[in-house]
Amino acid sequence: MKAKTRKSIVKRFKITKNGKVMRRAVGQMHYRAKSTGQKRRELRRLTEMSKEESKKIKKLLKY
Image (cartoon, rainbow, N blue to C red):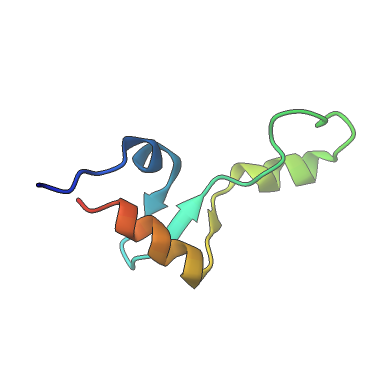
């Protein structure tokens, strides 16, 4: 049986040209009024995942 790509993983993660797995920063949904503007801008950027976690994600992203 052919292995399929997990579509939910595709939507949540991005793999860069060098093979790094990037994800959205946490803490963007609510309670943002008390955080500074600088912190809000920093949270917009993608963050790199650890090597251990990125291996698991890459297994789910076969294609």
